[in-house]
Image (cartoon, rainbow, N blue to C red; front, side):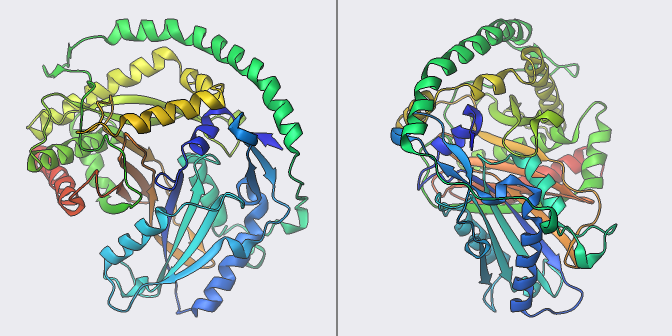
Length: 480
């Protein structure tokens, strides 16, 4: 039995029918020969069965403390059954890529059963009929609760599921012979309440200790980067301000999904035209331009930059493979700048300042504070945010969206001999932040996936066009 820390438990406390707190990945495979769907399903179940010992995520479930008085616990699920986690779907004969995105959005909007381990695998047949994919293609849509892992650890587990050419394919990742896993009974309510009583005194002391360490670091970071600054290119740097946007409201239960693909060589050519620019900053500039075009069309363009929350991977060897190891920074999305090249320069400098501020506070400082947050404090914070988001016109927030850039596999992967041809990651949205971007690289391409609710992004196809327009503007501005 292992108790969740405050950071992991935050995603459990945020769970509701409107706000399922899981992340996902959609993987598309090309088979060399046509395989019957029943055989494919059998082979995939066998592969997942062989991989179960690779991660604790697969076979442990949550146990909650009575009345929610403390963070929940992970226990090894004695009733685990693989067939309860693998599902099958098939696209209609006249389906298109938009129908696939609608299916994925529907699956992503469905909460998982908390009485079982919090992951699902959905096999989607019929992708070969879509012009975007080769014939004999199928999809594998994987959902995992964010309390169990973050995006980086998820990609590591995904990579371990695939074929390993250094091993015999007949015994690929078969770890069952060395698997010592056993289930465990659920703890009694009295045991959980006794632990909650002890943590009621212990956790605030740890939180106070971490808070005292963080406060002077925050003051130093604010002193270093307070107020407007001027970038080396002469662009006036405005910090993101608290303001309303269409995305800062109470979200509905429905989900919308759209994705775009960019060639990695093209993004790198943009990056190299501006010395010191990172790939992440190019993506921030693309999103900034896309938001600018979209908000102009909605007649809702603000005068100041919007805030973009950028998760930072702080995972070390000591962090393990599961759970969350995340820092964060808020970068300015320069929707206030019309020229695409100046926008890129301003975004680069804003991101540089945000990272410098984050480094001043320490990579682990915010994470350490979050880990020691009491359960009732987290629930109260989430309840207050949800209530405030019902304010007409949305809630003034320091951030409008999230942009997570996850490095994916560089080498070609295959599963049961089928080549992985496309992969995309999907984040989560909550009250107050109803727009989430995830960029995931694979070989020579990056897939940018956008998750939203119908009431936060009212014209998703328009926004797709705006992102593509922003990308093309940057290519043109950098001489491509």
